[in-house]
Length: 66
Image (tube, rainbow, N blue to C red; front, side, top):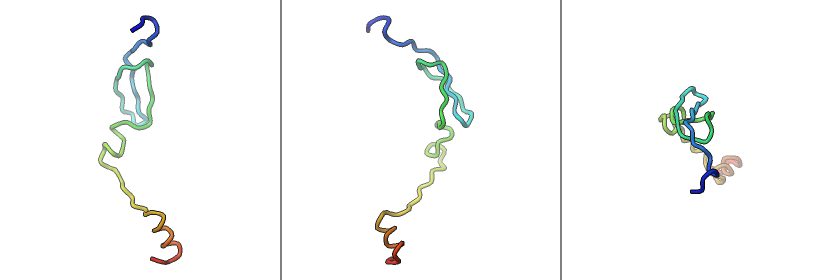
């Protein structure tokens, strides 16, 4: 690797909107994020799967064919 052209890695404090903080290595000293593993629905088990149907189902419902 060439010297003097790569950014320096520093310990970075990452702060989520839910209040959870953790440390990683980055080129910036602080990062603010909207979603982390503590508040994301996939990781918390509060995931909702809503089956809204496809275009055919919407068409049938709209014109009363179903």
